[in-house]
Length: 551
Ligand SMILES: O=P(O)(O)OC[C@H]1O[C@](O)(CO)[C@@H](O)[C@@H]1O
Image 1: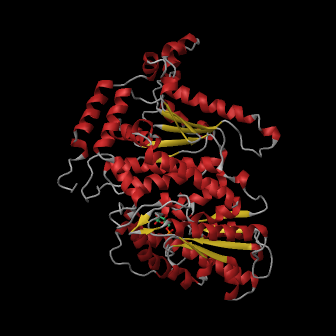
Image 2 (image 1 turned 60 degrees about the vertical axis):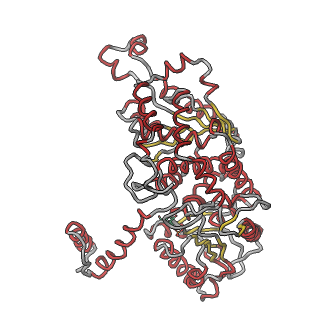
Image 3 (image 1 turned 45 degrees about the vertical axis):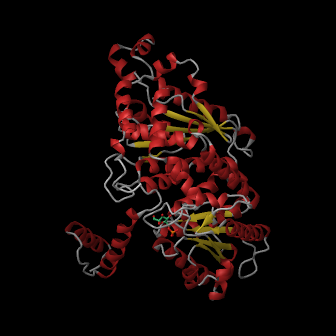
C-alpha cells in the first residue's frame, strides 16, 4: 500500500467502530462485567509458555476484543509480523531488517537477509561467547599478570547496558556468586569510580558493549577504564588484550580503540540496540550465569516468538497486550502504563522496558513521514511491588488518571532464598493479588459506611475501582521465563507500532541532544562561543563556569 492509498488510521471503519463502542460502553464497571459473566475470571485468560495471563480485569467485553482484533486485521499487523520474521527491511527509515528473532532461532533454522541465511553466523558467535565465558568462569582465561578474573565490568549504555544489567539482577540466583559483575553506563565519572574503586585491576575484565562503538558515553568510560587499568597495573598497551573485550557491529572502531578483533563478539545491523540483549551484548550475563542458562533463556524467547508468529489472533498474547494498550491509549486517553513486578529480582525490568517501549514507539510521524493524528507510545514506568504500594499507588487507586497496570508475579520464591525468608513469599503474593482486586473492584461508599466510618470521611475512604490490570503469573523466575517475558513485551511493542503505522525500530529522537552536547562542551571547558546557543542556555553555561570558578 502506498502512502496516499492508505486510509488514515483514525478514519478507518474499524477505528470508528471502536470509538462508537467506547461511547456505548461508557464507564463500564468491572463489578458489572463480572456479575454479567460469571466465567469471566477463568475465561479471560491465556497461556503462553510458562506465563499465565489474566486479562479479566480489563474494561473490555467480547465485543471490544472483537473490534480490537478487527483493527489489527485492518492494519495488517500479522502481515508486518511475517515480513519481520522473513527478514524484510521493515525498519524503513534506516533501510534495515529487524531480526532479533533470529538471535534465538535454533541452529537448524533458516532466516535470510539479502538472500543469506544468518542463523549459522548467530550460532558461531554464540559458540564463541560460550567458549570465552567458560574460560573466564573456569579460570583458564587470566589477566595480564596471570591472575584469575574475578570481576567483570560491562561498559555500555541504552540497549548495550539495560538488558544485561537487568537480566543479571533477575537471574542473580543462577549466577556464579564468586564473580563480581558490574554495569557502568553513565558518563558521570562517579559511575565508573564506584564500579572499580574496590576492584583489583589484575582480576578485572572490561566488556565494552556498543553496537556502533562511537557512543560518546561508552567510549569515554572505556578510555578511562583502560587508563585506570594500565596505570594501576603499571603496564603498557599489551595488557589491554587480556582485560578488554568488545561487543559490537563495528570491527574497525573496535580495532581503533586498541582491542584485538579476535576479542570482539560480533552482531549485525539488523539487531536494534534495544533488541540486542540476546546477541553478543549478553556476554557479561553469559559469563555470570553460564552458557547453558543463557541458552535456556534464548529458548524462552524463541518459544514466545513462535507463539507470536503462529497463534491465531484470539489466543495471541502479544497481540492481546498490544491491543489493550491501544484501547486505553487511543480510546480512554490513558497517557501512561505502569509495570509492577512482584519480584525484587525484577527491580530493573521496568527501566529495561522503558527503552524498549518508549524508544520504539515514542514517535509522532508515521512510516511515510506524515504527522500522526492519534496517540502513540505511552509513558512506561513502575518499580517492584510492594515498594510502589507505599509510594505512588495512592494516585493509581484514587487519583484522577487512568493508568493501566501489568502485575507480574511468581508462585515460587527463587530457589536459593535463605530458608527463613521463604515464608515471606506468601505475604508478597497476598499483596500482589489484593492490589489487582482493590484496583478493579474498589470499595463503594455504602461498603465504607457499613464499616462505621463517619460520613465526612466516606468520600476519602471510597475507592471507585475500575482500574484495569493484566496479571502475568508464572511458577518461578527462571532464565527461560525471563526470555519469555521479554519477547512478550517486544512483540507487544511491535503490535502497537504496526497499528499506529510508525517505525518502531529507529530512534532519530535521540540524535539532536547528542549533536548539541558536542557543540556545547567547548563552551563549558574553554568558554568558547557557541554560535546559535540560545540566551537561556548561554546564561546557564556562564553560571556553570562561574560556579566552577572558571573565568
Ligand atoms: O550500542 P551503542 O551503539 O553504543 O548505542 C547505545 C544506545 O544508544 C542509542 O542508539 C540511542 O540512545 C540506543 O538505541 C542504543 O541502545
